[in-house]
Image (cartoon, rainbow, N blue to C red):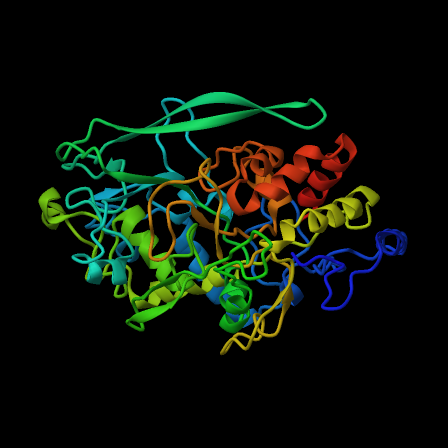
Length: 476
C-alpha cells in the first residue's frame, strides 16, 4: 500500500520520519488506512447474538415476521433431503440420476463449511470441478456463457453417487502428505498437503489433460448483504495492473448471468464465477443433486450417460416457487456478532491484521445499497472482510483451471465474518478452498502470490503477536 511518507514534495529527513512514526504509534494511530471494527454488529442491523452450533442458521435479526415465514419455508427445502421420482413427496422428488448429495445441508453443514472426507469415506461436502483445455478461438461461445469447457462425457463436476440403475461417475480419493513450515523464531508448523485422484471411472477413460479443481462448500451467512454491495464500489477497489505498486492486483471476474443473458460482475463461488445467489443456488441443484430448474434446465449428466431414461420429478423439478423460497432463505441467513472485541489481545491482533496488509484484500467494511423490497439488507454497514475480487494466491494453492476471467492461480477473497465459529458449527471444517488447512495458522501459511508478503510478516512475528492475530481472527 502507499507509504505513510509518500509525498509529491521534498522528502523529510530520516530523523523526522522516525519521530513522526513513533508519535503516531504512541497515539494509537494506524500507519495504514484500513478501518478497525468498532462495533460487534458485523452484519449490520440484522446481526444476531448467537455463537453456538446453530449460529449460522438464523434469519436476519431485522427481518419482518411475515418474511420469517418465507425464510422457514426456504429452510425446509434447504435442509430436507430430495428423493428419487416418482414419490409422494412431489415437491422434493427428481434426485439424480447422478449426484453428489441429496440435500443442500449435506454440503453446507448447518449452513456452514463443508470438509474433506476421511479415508474410505464418501466425499459429500467436497467435490471436484472438471474442465478441458480451451481453444480461445473455437470455444468463444462456451467460454462466454460457461466460463470453461466441460468434459464431453463427465461434464463439469464429478458425481460420486447415483440412483439405482445408474453408476456413479467415479470415486474421488484424497491422499495426504505432510510438510513442515519453519517460522522466523524456529517454530515448526506441520502442514497437510492434499493429493487428489479419480478412480474407477464408469463412463469411459479420463484424458491425461483433464483439469480438476477441488471445492469445499463455503458458509452461507450474509450472502444477501454481499449481493447488495454496490458494483461500483467493488470495481473501484480493483487494481488489475497494480498501478499503486503495492504488489496486490485485485481483479473483477466477469461472468454470464443466465437470467439477464449478458455478462456481469461475478460475486459468489470460490472464483467469483456466479453473479447472484439464485444462479449459484440453482447451479448447485443441477450439479450437486441432478435437479433441473427454469434458470438451469439441464443437469451435469451428459447425453452419453443416459440420464434421459431416468425418472424425473417434473419439468422443471425445482419449481419457480420453490426456487424463490430457496433464494430468499440463502439471501437471509444472518451474520453472528463479533465476540471478545474488548480483549486486549484481540485488539492488538486487529491492528496487526491491518499492519500486515491482510486488509488489502480482506476489506473490512462495506455499505450496502438499496435492495428492492428488502429493507433488512438495505444501507447496512457491514464488516465481511472481503473485496469480492480475484487474487493470485501463488502456486501452492493453484488449481490450474480457468473460470471466466479467473486464471488457475486466482481465487476470490473469501469473507472472514463468522470465521471463529467455523469449527463450532462443524468440528471437521477446514479452511481454504478445499479445506486443507486444519487451523487458521495453517491457512495463513498457505498464502502465496499477492499475499506472500503478508504471510511472510506473520512468519517473522513473535509468538505473542502471532497469538494475537489468531485471537483476532477467532473473534470474527
